[in-house]
Image (tube, rainbow over all chains, first blue to last red):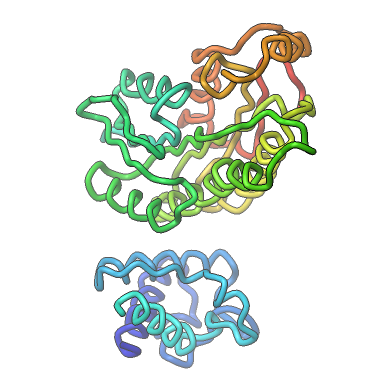
Length: 99
Length: 233
């Protein structure tokens, strides 16, 4: 599931970056920084990414996830800091919904 | 393409009137409320849900966009009130009013705006009330929830502007519906007397302003709260 989730994050980023044309997001991988220190996204970019990911998860897996939930906001290390972190968090949410 | 408009609290009162008005104008109207609706029209779909239930709201938005088309406008009309002195207001009543009037507006904006943001276009209109600027005694729970809606409107207008979504609010005067059914007549009269134009509001007063906010030409109008009857915010 982690691989599936990470792929969804990467595809969402790639799609959105066609409009943004951000060099730092041209070929995103698990190490790509997203939001926060050295991040490639501002707050609007993060919002757009989360919205896109939620939609893709539903379309591809038929699962509803709410990425911006209490757990995400209260973690000392933000799950939105990198592709890897977001993929891990997304995988957890998907598995919870599928359980 | 027929434009889809979502109206909360569409089962009765102003919401029902708005649904019928926009159906007559040829729009596809999606209504929602806690109970079912008697309104039948090929361009009308009704969803039974609690507007503060984020799972139900998201499911509705998905289904509407899939079956009816992109949501062009959201009118957050759903609201409840309970006139009472603060010292005699149960916490459960206060919570119930905040949940529908404020949390419901928040959840609806969040989930509908996600869909609108993909198209970089949308219109949101929330409902406040003249009870806010008139500091109406007896309506602490109701007016405070609507004062919060005003703040939410103004902040949402700033946050959603880059996505091409305008967010405004209308503050109606008393309109003869179930919402004010239990308010004593002398209190209603006293309230109307504080308006510059001392009369009940009518549906046409509301649709007049809504049409302005929803107009494609109003893409430079956002974060505004307009109270009816000459009441100043």
